[in-house]
Image 1 (cartoon, rainbow, N blue to C red):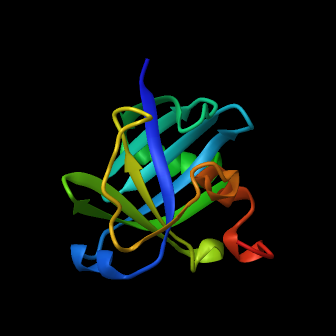
Image 2: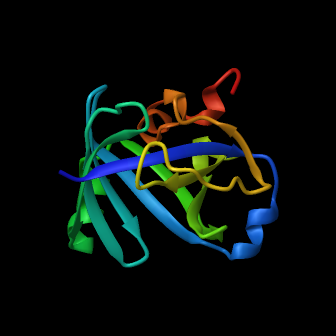
Image 3: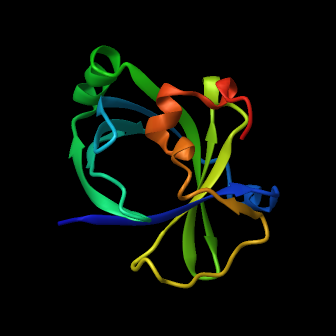
Length: 156
C-alpha cells in the first residue's frame, strides 16, 4: 500500500521566492468525506486521479494514477463541486524537497509549505522562511479549503 507522510507549515518569510515562478495547479474533489477523498488534479499538460485515506497522525494511505488530460478536464467541469486552485513552487533546502503552495480565488492570501518524509520521525532542517506547523490543523487540508475557503475564516 502507498503511504503519504507529510508535514505542512505556514510561511514566515519570502526567501523561498528565489526558486522561480512555479506551476499553476487546478484540482477538484470527486468525492470527499471525513475518511477519504478522491481528487483530480491538472498541472501543465498532465493530470492525475488521487485517492487518499483517513489521516493517521502525519501519514495516510495514498494512491495516485496518471489519467488523460481530457478526462481530467471533464471531471473538473462536471464532477467536482469543490475546487482549489494554486501555484506550486518546488524549493530544495538542505537536501530536502519542499513545495510551496500559493492559493488563488477564495483562498488567496494563504501560502503553505509541505515536505514529504520517508518516516514519521525523520529529522529535517527548517528553512528560515518556515513558520508555524499546521499539519494537525484540519483547516489547512486542501479538502477543507475547497469547502471552507480561507477568505471565510474569522481567524487563522
